[in-house]
Length: 194
Image (cartoon, rainbow, N blue to C red; front, side, top):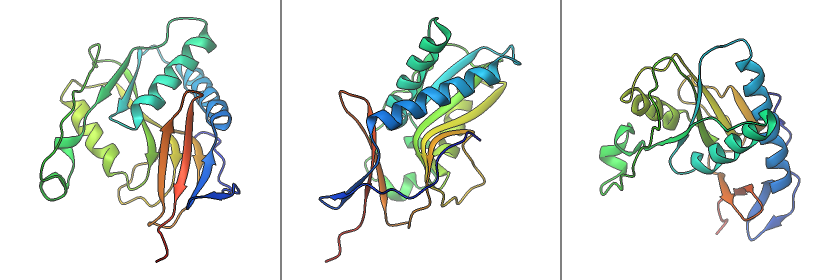
């Protein structure tokens, strides 16, 4: 796993929210992550593809692909996305009116090294659903997981291979990753104390 930070956030609270990663920290982390993915590619001949989990993983995958292209001074790897709506293990109870978005896999998966990308890794259930969805498009040689924030709290034995920030949080604290004009930010939202 990548050398992500695990110290608690020290940013001041704004309207019940605390900044976990500002855009410059997120960009530094994504650049480092892109370098680690590329370093692991040196010993593998498998062609690479990034697949963002809709919706939160898509902007992270896009930024990661851009960094990989810059570091290699070449075209970024192919970039796809996967919708997990119908693959969720709680789809029947939690999604009475599911909104299904398109999955876009630009090339065949067979023989590829796929980096599955999400914004936050928490219970592992989203990643499990994404792997199930991905397998309907083919059988990659290998699947790795990259995430901006690893917040622990797993319910399934799934761990990110790469992450920018690791932090242990109470289960009622939400992590929101937002895309701004300057880049990505991660915010913590604590439950209101009414």
